[in-house]
Length: 327
Image 1 (cartoon, helix red, strand yellow):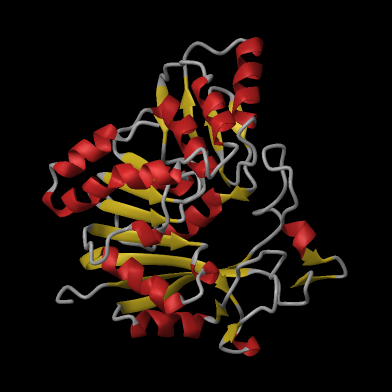
Image 2 (cartoon, helix red, strand yellow; image 1 turned 180 degrees about the vertical axis):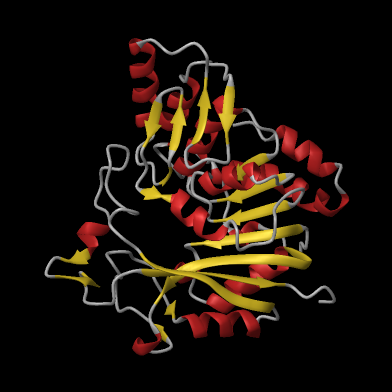
């Protein structure tokens, strides 16, 4: 997991020099063996991946993939699959590597299909994805023509999973940093597009989160924010007592109008909801690559319209907003 090329390039980029100076320490902390006891094992699996040269890659299809003209033998295929599986659980995807289908918990491609034609084109843009997981959507952003894609996620397992995919795809314009949004410098203003998907309801202060995202945007840049929501008939927002769908750390789930209000009050314009969907058991489910409990276990077995705690079952919305050019 070598970040030297990114740091070197950012040191030559005036608006990113100050962050580049901090990155080595941030990366060291985010990949600390003392803090993360399983990291050594995941790194060992990463180092044991075979060197396979691709004939072609696809970053603009449902499965982010790499293929070769020379099919792997059954033994090579089994070894590759076993090594990648040691990085379980795989939550965002899907991926396809030389015949190995990583069937992740989430069909993240469905979310991408809902937003890709509703946002500003990503071609030639610098893009940030906050809470990116293993980087599936980052790969799709790169496939949409972005010049540079930066994902941030504090989970070292997801970072290792990204590097496992990068081991084969070898793309220089995409990086996942082992940090949270709080490690991004204030008032950075360097990204043309910022994504935050599935994060805001985990933040104690949603307004503070939106303001952090806003500070990453260039004037005129676009924010894409995806979140759990409640229907308007249930009120302005839901503040769960304890867990929501067995998730801890869920502080606030807004209605669509509340979400738009948060965006407007944060100084953003052209705020709109571009998609609302009920989360289904086809989109989020247990698989061989994510064998823990998933959505079907989080719903009331007698009433799928409710979570196991009795709250409205998960619905998700995607909102877009822009930072004014004169901000």
